[in-house]
Amino acid sequence: MQMLIDGNRCDSCSGQTFAVRNPATGTVIDTVPLGGVEDIDRAVEAGTAAFEAWSTIPARERGRILFVAAQEVRRQNRSLGALLTAEQGKPLREAIDEINGFAYTLEYYHGIAASNHGEYANLPGYGHALVSRVPLGVCAAIIPWNMPALIMGWKVGPALAAGNTMILKPASTAPLTCLALAGILGEAGLPAGVLNIVTGPGETVGRAIARHPAIRKISFTGEIATGRRVMEDAAPAMKRVTLELGGSDPMIVCSDADIPAAVEGAARGRFYNCGQTCTAIKRLYVDEKIAQEFTDRLTERIRSMRIGSGMTEGVAMGPMNNRAVQQRIVDLVEAAREGNEGTIRTGGSVPHGEDFHAGYFYEPTLITDVPQDSVLLAEEVFGPVLPAVSVTDLDEALSLANKSRFGLGASVWTKNLDCVDQACSGLKAGIIWVNQHLRIPPEVPFGGMKESGLGRENGYEALEDYLEKKTVLIRP
Image (cartoon, rainbow, N blue to C red; front, side):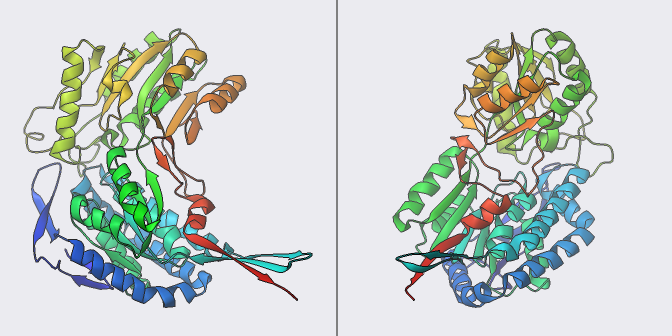
């Protein structure tokens, strides 16, 4: 498959390619161009050339193109889901849900695209004040491999609805679905040059995006260290930056919680997408009065989960996306085992057997009685491992939950409204769920506190962030 620049499929200036592999088998499923700095220059030129016409198209028409594309994506959701499973690894039903999430996001921005009205005020002594909102110009997005279709929608939807042109760099291990979705947008009427996709490594393509002086905004989702480099590289041109840098989301289970519902929530919230989700449950704090029953039930629930290829019917959890992230999980669990950091209740190793030997699989794992200084609680564990801690009450749970450099999401499970109020007031997180976890509708802003990032995706807030305010004062 080829890159997309100025509406045309094209090869990289270097003429080189790299392979995309199926994480369930390790086999090559396609190759894409190995982009470089010159390709970003070409993409910026294409975006600049397309910007004037696209930005002056009525917002309602821009929204209509997004809506037409969304309807076609829904019609093709099974084939697009199969492509996503092939390159990313998640079960097909999860992949189809993600494809539908991309469509839902475009539909949302279609709905609010025309709501970008200016403001007027008659100010005595100054005259008439007009405040308009205008698009920024050429913007860019750098997205990860864990939820490539959904995160593409989060970034492309508001940027295009606001009248900007866009350069997108997908993850090297999962670029194919993004290219397919961009093709559908083109078929829906998106003019050439409005959305350009360049494939290649972050060290060259991503850095070229961050440093290019003509790109006015970057939206990045990924690791903290990489996010810092994006900020540093973007600073000389004073470009806007939105950073979603992951999290270590706590789940707090109070003594009065609905235990079966909370157990199911923990299983789904941790092991969805093989635990490779920024807002996945990554730390579990359970009131000691129910801890034994809760962990016993959760252990059995986890043991019932079937793992395997995402294309196999009935599979609850697929492989990890690539060998490096699998090895990271292996190393973390082995270090915890050697350091006696808790009790492995279930899982804790790479599965054996003919169906697993070539893929990047890891067993869904629950570790209880984890000490507070464990790396499993301090860092973002991006895989199917759930550390659990017993706490005396909600006060202790909140204290431990906030003892983290991350502040993306959190959830509290309780029937007590006073506990809900205390948790929602006390938790330092950008999004808080009550008796649920993980799902994020496009209508609400999403982003983190502390080192989990800057700015917000989704909602009207994201549309606003792709617009510049211009003030005009008229003296009668």
